Image 1 (cartoon, rainbow, N blue to C red):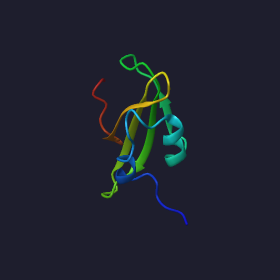
Image 2: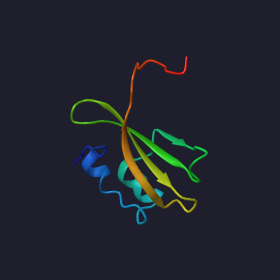
Image 3: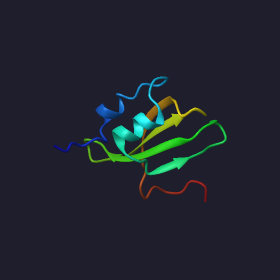
Image 4: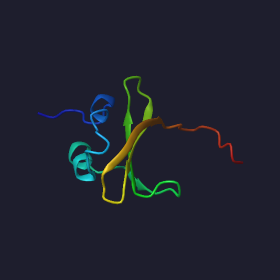
Length: 86
């Protein structure tokens, strides 16, 4: 039987300090992006999903150098939002 894995209830099961990248990818599949930022020393897995209100969302999973989850949280994807930098 198939099920929708990319839901907030399933994402909330991620346990920082316990889950590894292998756990995350086994549960949710490969991320849409693997990113890096100067303020975090490790890869950031970015998942794209749609919440119950049909809003486009991101879910970020921050890994340390040993691929252990250190933090994870959702965020909104602002499609067609004005570019404030111009």
